[in-house]
Image (cartoon, rainbow, N blue to C red):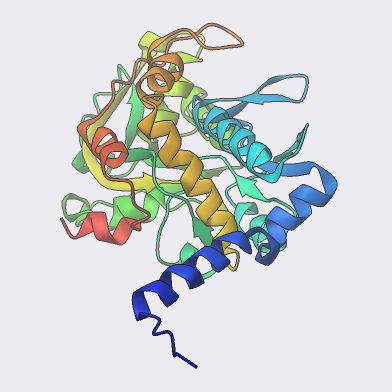
Length: 304
């Protein structure tokens, strides 16, 4: 009998093919979605324009629409005729645990991908790069970190913004009091009502809340950039097949040129329910993230 010699390359190719064919079967999240034709999306209630409620239990925003497109792609790959999306409001405090325990299948809010969180959850490839800055009243006279001495600074419970402020080199010797809002809208209310002199948070959230205020011209975003951070969609940590499916959908969206139009829709044009315009231009950092898809944590950005 003549022996047939099989190359290692051929064996590797066959192995990859078999892995691909069995990927869905090995994914608890994809299996659950396929068997129930239902998926639970974690959303925020006041992270305008990334993820927020438009009233009557409806949710929308840049990341929410991105996730709907991802889930539509996954629905087609699973051969489902319909896919019901259940929207689960999450907070800065409970978003990671709810993804961890399986209550939420995919979290589409304003979560920074960092090494600490990556111990508990997975992150899809980044489609938004954030800058953390400071919002103040326009007549406050505050323009930099050094002017926060003796002031009250608002932040949202469960976020890392004030820690970033304290660590900034220009914050040396600057003592201020921290006050907490239960969500971003509550934190902005602290600034609006005078119970805080400044609100430290992601620029998109600051811009969204200012645009949504009664008198947007009464506020401004000031000061040094405290941090540049990748804001990414969260997925279960121990489900690489689901993460791969999410990232494949993201790659398709980018390749099809959908991202610039999504940016314009949510950041530069009137958005529901009040037809406000956030007015945040596309940054070179976010544009670069689209061109070079990756799931690098915030620590990698800090090294630059």
